[in-house]
Image (cartoon, rainbow, N blue to C red; front, top):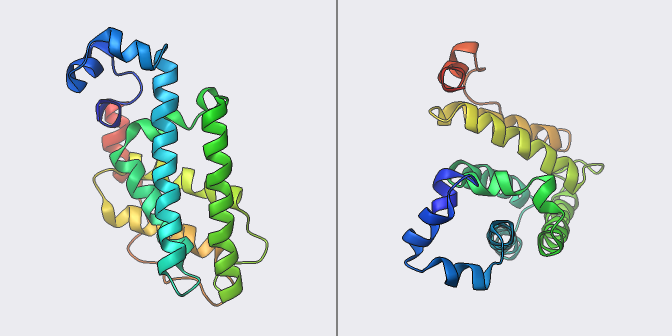
Length: 187
């Protein structure tokens, strides 16, 4: 929870205090802070994989991938550590890389379902989607006070991967520089 709230810069002291354990206990399980972060990243990636698998089981249509992309953006909004942990430094960790490979395979399954249903462009791959989602996550961070604008970015993302004639209608208004002013003031 500490990482979700404060990102990866959260101190070990705050982590052990919130967890109700001592430093020794923490470091017996995780020799370095990077090992702890990698374990948390794997946990978060596995949770996202579980979400995707549920959508594969529950959804009858090819629209499951669109719902999954929205879940990823919403998850990013509430968990700063997840976005920070999915960086080159932590993706080099073997456990994180294995979870990432499983995540990409599951996302390819969601895309295949969408292709079969005719809702997703045939040439779109999982890494295309991940790059688009990363952009939507960056936009959601900058537009944190405006769910309407985040929804618009998700609709744009959906339109980018949609098969011709399947793109969702674009909702809301286009963002303006004023929408980014709160983030710029913090910067």
